[in-house]
Length: 296
Image (cartoon, rainbow, N blue to C red; front, top):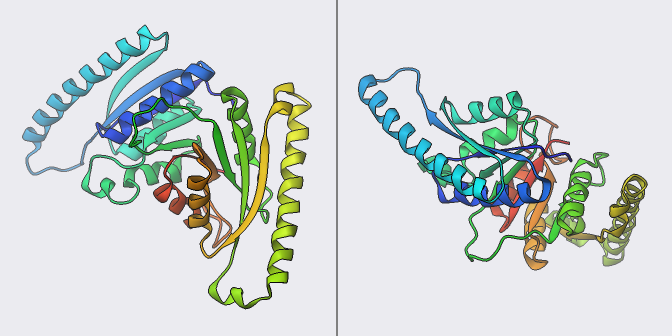
C-alpha cells in the first residue's frame, strides 16, 4: 500500500475536521502530501440564481481562509498541504479529483453537515465509497479527546471469497504503524440454525478457525519473504458465530478495542456489484472506530 497522496474531503462538519486528524496521523507515518478539498454544491437551475452566486462567493472566501490557516499549521509541522475549493456535486467532484490527482487514499467524515448526511452514514460518503477506486477511510468523531493512535487493526474476511486485499492493506498499515492485526470470520446463523446440534456448530467453527488461520499465515509468509518487518507482525485469527455478520463484527471491534477496521466494500450476499454490500455498509454505520473500505 503506497500512500503518496491523501485526499481529505472537508465540508465544515466536526466529523470532517476529525478526518483531518487521521489524514495528518497517516501522513506523518507515510510521508505523503495532503490535498484538502471543499466542494460547494452547484445545482444546474436556480430560481434565485444571483442570490445563490452571492452566497457561494462568501462561502468560497470563508473556506479558502480556513484552508489557508490549515496549510500554515500543517506546514509548521513539516507536512505538505494544499487546499482547493471546487463547485459541483460533492461526491462526483471528490471521486473525479481523486482519480485525476492519483490519490492513494480518500479520508472523510462518516456524516456531513446536511440534513440527509446527518442520518446514518452521510449520503455523500456512501456515494464516494460506491464510486471510488481508491481506498476510503471513513472517520467518526471521537468522544474522548485523547491522542490519536492506531494499535489494533481488525480485518473481517469471508473465507468463501478469494480476495486478500483487505488483509494485505492492513499488513502495510500495521508495519508502518507498528500495530497488531486481528483477522475475524463470522459464521452467520439464522434463528432456525440454532436447532442444529452444538457439536455440529462447534465443528463448523473449528473448521472455519483452521481455514482463517491457514490463510492468514500463508499471506504473512508470502509477504515476509519480501519484507522482514512483516515477520514481526502479530496476527491473531478467530472465527465466531452470530445472527448478524455486521453487528458481530462491530461488537467484536468494540470489545477488543479495535482502532481501525479494514474491510472490502462488498460481502458475499446478493449479486456482487459496484455498490456497497449490506454487511460493509452496516459496519461503517455502526462501528465505534474508523473504517478503511476498499474494493477487492
